[in-house]
Image 1 (cartoon, one colour):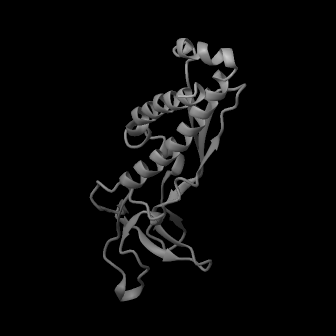
Image 2 (cartoon, helix red, strand yellow):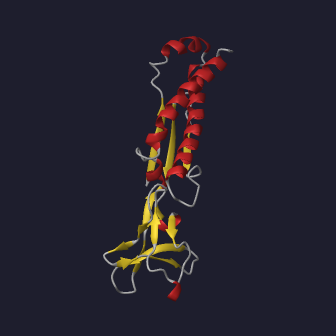
Length: 195
């Protein structure tokens, strides 16, 4: 799964400003610089917002987003995030350690959003629990039936889904990204005009 965020600008909106730059052949260079700087800022903003919203232990959102830079001939920068669904155990789960026998809790709880309450991980009377596999990987799992096996891991949203969320992440930072783009355009135009 992947999500894509494009950063572009309608050159017609900035034509008046760019007339001076085009005489010097610098308009597309300025656009490229502004878009690439904005893409870096957008990646940082998206990463920070996701960390605020989701109760995930890892903080590699920034590393999971790759920037495809704008060029002079193609004034469009993009941020691409790829990845599969995260294991529910990557989020807040209680108890956080694997417990067996008499130490096993009556119920395991978990949450994906920091603002949510911990929810019982139980479906149809079948309770989820934490397990550690021979590989060393720890996961929240549930049984398919009352029988001991098979078990299946519980998953939660992927990084692209979390980062692209209109309600919680991208939709929150989009106005700041637009503001950053305008500020970066202004900065690089002044720089190109020697101001």
